[in-house]
Image (cartoon, rainbow, N blue to C red; front, side, top):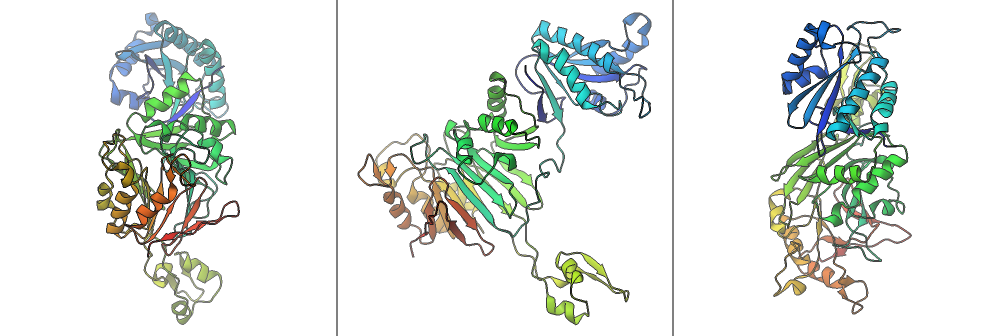
Length: 510
């Protein structure tokens, strides 16, 4: 049997194909009330007007607990005024909610949904002023709607802290870790999977995923990243080698019991792709997802105290983005000498001042931690680019960048004299842009299958890509392999961390 699908979003804007019914609970005394009904009235005046008229004619209109009034507000969209609340005031022992009335009303909603082929959408009905318990309401939904084959989506409004419920808040200044889950272009090989990149901030186990090619969830089994700790997904573009793995990863995340919300960002069309895949395969998610589609012009998409993310459009066959990550500024160093000269006792007071808090001493003096810190240290900046035929588009956004991660599908030697329709970059074109912008570290990825580690064996040599980049870029760079892990340190340097007992040194063109 299917289960309720949860999304972060607005129930007055239901998603998915076909006719839809929005269900909410009303009281039996004719008051339109507060809460979700106000959102309905802001969108459509008809449900409130119809409800008040229905109640006014209650002697003959059939208005009663358990009754439902279906009001068509748009073509193939109805609002169901379900009378499932007795009055507007109750006690803890006897709240206004009436579960038997809700059950009766949901049965009527199901009958209409079956007649018109509609799906049902709602907030967590009866759990606000009505005083209901969601577990009991969910059982009624299961019995009256899902059991009859009617799909149900429940919407939770986004909260500012919705994605910050994991182990610990990432702390600026504790390093950024980049784990390559897939580095192949277009299709996997025995050595490389298709695109995927995990990014961790600080020492937290929480992480973000940039692109999710087919097989990404299998790659996670071979590295320290865990789907249970995934908080954000950023899709650069909707070609399959960058997104086909997402429905499966979301399903796997739910199968291990995760209930924390997940934010997903990407181009227009991402929501249709993802929800269609989940609906057609009857894949319920036990946690809310918030899908944010980015306009073609890009812009700021995430703004937290520890990280800001901006999307910038690139040139490709479909809408494609680079993501500019700007870490929150780090606190300056604590001035121990100044604190001692002020006569502040060492110990806990020093720790509080170092953390930026204020203290009060026994002698009545007060001090503010900000007066004992050097200037704040600017956070680090990273640019992660999707498929792109014109690396020059990055130049306005590379100032102050510590690390550029960009696709390098082939060499200029291969591209020479050819009409290339795929919209990708050469190693030389990316290297020239990185050098021109003064980016100190460059990682190339998205490597064509024609470039192999052993020259002359079914393709060109991987060193062809390396040498072409070296000819134009004199700073540190790598061509990433699957499971390569890099750390962007506090001082802005990048190191390739060992994995499976192996550490690869940076190529240094200087």
